Image (tube, rainbow, N blue to C red; front, side, top):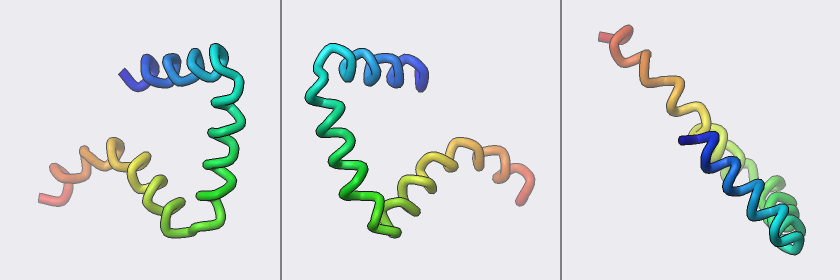
Length: 57
């Protein structure tokens, strides 16, 4: 599912080139905010932490 969403996003960026500039502007605006970057990294790491629940019990 993750790869399907990534492919859809890349397809949209190729179909509508101005979206690439908009995405770049959003990334440049969010990158200096450490809290937003940490939140995004936490969301990205969350699926890999599912196995730790069984280990912690």
